[in-house]
Image (cartoon, rainbow over all chains, first blue to last red; front, top):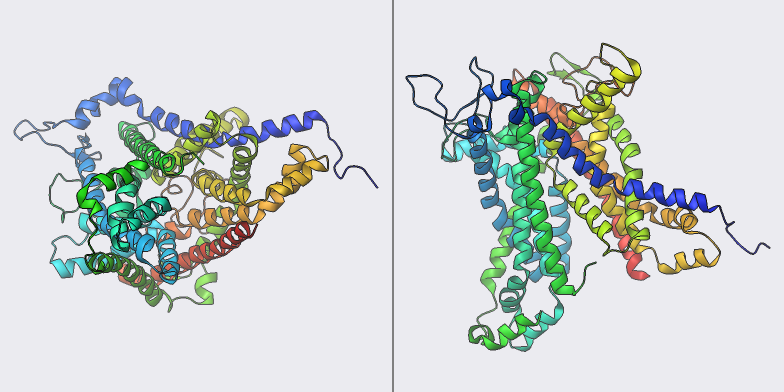
Length: 319
Length: 316
């Protein structure tokens, strides 16, 4: 019989093993840094290179430009014309419009369903809702884009008599389908983490079940629900395939929600394949990537912060 | 948390809970939201099933595309997808597992390092997929691949500095890293303390405990993470568009620096660049169905394993 089941190994082995594991653990952190560095690196000529700035400077990307002497100044994204135009304004507008429609469509449904699931649903009903949401989350975005392109677009055009088959309304609704699971999950989680003591207190004051939900649970979980909405918005801004396939991709400045539109993300996807390596156009596309990265980074950081504080408030600690 | 209670006690409108019906209106409104979501999911799934079921046949699954994708099958796309996700799992899962082990076994949950890494993981999960595509192009192809070509091989014609399946797989491995980490961590949390204590009591070192006790015990969770990562990775198109996926290839990828066809990218190409959408429609629907069945099956298996892990944790 041996006294030990394990033979003591050398300390070196232990030390190297720990360091190896630690190095791997920093992969995510390093990845985030590398992503930023390498995308921003390809965008820097916009700030430093005079040749590139002649075509695309921050000023030219932001403000109205006069391209022909007899015509009024305008915002225009036409990178492939003889006189390349790189105004980001039409793309920005398209992105925001698509995200707004997606939010208007998804937020009420997702929050409503989350309230039902957390507050009213029987155990059995919850066992139906959860898999449905997981299934919806599991649909690849290219499939949602396909569905919007082939089926939803025709349906919307027939119902509303739209001029353009592919438009921002179509893309926005499909985008909404993609972000329902995010909002639902975060919102339901927030409501479920409200301590039972709060519910009991309301019940002791004579509230019936739905009064408990609406006067106690909902207000307490509100920051979490808001975080869910914000995280969903971040996803809507960055989502690519759906808008690329369903929005019609016309880079125009318009306030209408039934026009075609082109988003920032879809522009990268549609144009990067044909762009000349190192050209102004190439730099601008990486600049758009940098903007998307920073925007979603800030949104995620903010959302996470809110959720963390909520957790501390409910549980008194960070787990 | 007491301020809610105090508010409730001091605020007359909140305090006075008069029995106002049974809350049928909020109940039915929120139930409607649930029903709408279920209905939309059903419409999508039934539509794909209806349009795609007729196309599925052995020929469709085993033949390459013909006549500008208006006929033939999708075998190269299936093959490319499988090859891609295998490479992705091999490169990504070990890193994710070790990250989870480090966070759970070596550091305290409140330490600065842990929180920094955790924030990075959460943010990585939120980076738009198209940004991953840009990163793959700029870093893997432009920096690493091009670097290998110019410094190690010294060749004019790009060998590694071009879109290739290995670069696409590495890009996806990064994208799915958070999924693997989260699943592994959940499994680590479910391991009873007694097991670890027993291992230490027998004289095992920390590393030995991790290799022989903790990782084998966490295998179902690791497996779940890998499957969820595959299901996510198989459906992502934006990250692989510039890093290796090809519109059409007459041959299958054989080496790590070959380009490849992929199901999701195939769906995108057929639905947006087909000269005659009506003619490609049956094949298009068939491809979508195959992609959906693949991702759903994987998800289903992952959910099953996960619920097993969860029930074990409760019983312990």
